[in-house]
Amino acid sequence: MTLVWASGYNGITDPDAQTYIAAVEAADGQAIEGEVALAINDFVVGCKFDGIWDAIKASCILAGARTLNGALVPLKGPAPTVSGFTSSDYDRETGLAKTVDATSFDTNRSNTADPQDNQHLSVWVSDLTYRGSFLGSQGTVSFNGQSQLYQTDLGANTQPKIHVAGGANKITQIPAGVVTNFWGASRDNSSFYVSRANSVNYTLNYASAFDDASNLKVFNSPTMRARTAFYSIGESLDLALLDNRVSTLMTDIGAAIP
Image 1: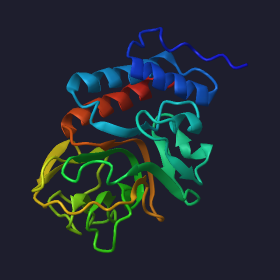
Image 2 (image 1 turned 90 degrees about the vertical axis):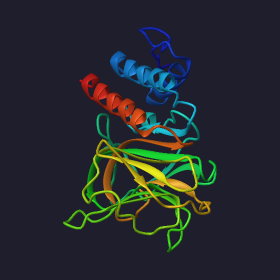
Image 3 (image 1 turned 45 degrees about the vertical axis):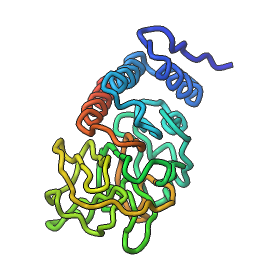
Image 4 (image 1 turned 120 degrees about the horizontal axis):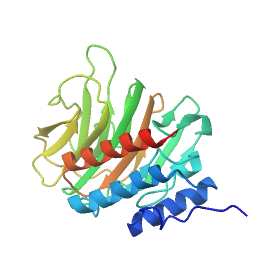
């Protein structure tokens, strides 16, 4: 019988954090460090204090857990369905890497689960080796109705593409360059949406379009080579507040890992 650390002690006071930590430890088969647990607890408490917790409908913290199985335990919403990922693709500090063998990471959250004019998506970009979609729906050739956080080639013409129920293929209102760390987009109206990249908010003046009905997937590009440590999907929220909480979580987890 495997003994699992009791998450209700050592300062882990939030019931949602307790439930999540206990599930991670059960999947890991052992306890996580107390400081890692505290970092998770502080994240949940902080999101509730900021008023953004309820807007998060599906999320995984793809770091901190001792094993890949533990990292795939959802913080909120459905558990993802993955194919081709192995334990060697997972790093406790920097998250999960998309390699040549990894074929699918389905969040099991439909792009139509949230209202067309009330939705967000975000990821934590730990590393990017080759272009692709960090988080997005399948969409069509025209990209109409997609929600996507997509990084193009890494050369001089690198350009992030962002869609939140948008009808535009190529978005150029964010400066060219590679996005690192927190990257998100949020729409709370039919006229424009906001993206946050490299700690700056940008307003993108694109009207909403019908929602593509496919599920949102992490690493939604077959040739992509990248690593991420967090994703969230849900209703619109303040991206700067979420950025602050996720950034603090990643810093605290990194400091807590021996």
